[in-house]
Picture 1 (cartoon, rainbow, N blue to C red):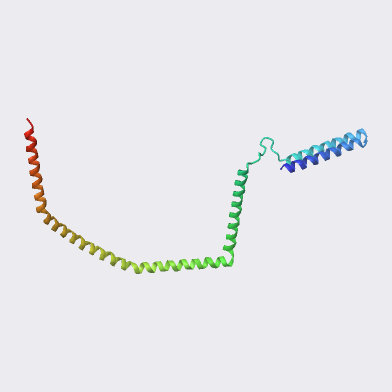
Picture 2: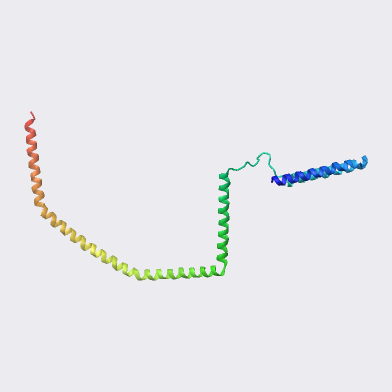
Length: 185
């Protein structure tokens, strides 16, 4: 931008120099006045043209020099964006190529075969799973019945011991209450 501004500025100075040199050539006052008005109009037209096209400088917000870290960050993200575009373009080219289309067809065929295999396997496994489920249910019921019988047998065997322990605890508590009761007035 700055280069464009300087170029337009230099061209404007050259044009003004040429206009002033015409004044020095000694043209008559009447023809010079008419030519000077025409040249002034051309000069204003050129200045307006340069101002609108060549001069893109912003006087209010001049670009400040960026720190090195910001320049590196911008360069990195620019590189990433370019690499992404290049990768996307390459993938698009591969997809549209004969090889890419063949790979897509083979992948589709492989997915179809895998899907058919999964359906066949499910059809074969469903009866086996049902049989396994019923077998596990029956074995669980047998185990629960056996466990219940064993717990009943253990409870019956431990009943005399628990009764004896209960009787001993009651006697000890009664002796303790009698002993404490003798200390109260």
